[in-house]
Image (cartoon, rainbow, N blue to C red; front, top):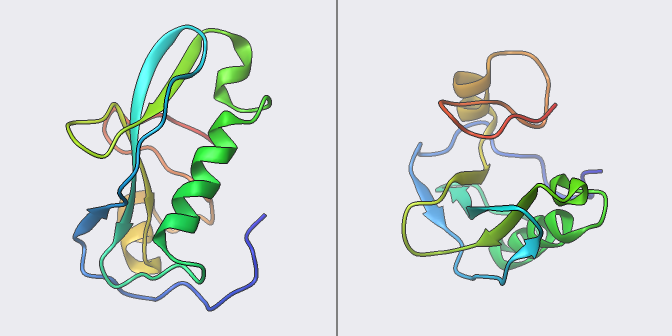
Length: 114
């Protein structure tokens, strides 16, 4: 569920910034690292750290990808991640994901979720 707040901006810069922060490993199985990134020009209502905390909490939830015991995740803010979790402007999301309304989209070899 998306919290109340200002609408997501129509346009961003197309450049990304990694939200600082890291975590220990959550789950069991093959460890996949991830970063939380926000497009320049997009400002979450509660700030980048709160957005990243929501992402981290969601992935640590017992109902997340880690629930099956075959995947574990670890947040990083330095280095090349296996997965990038990004908050994008409307235009960037449409360019990368197409015009269908969805909260996630596959790009390259990124994790897929529907």
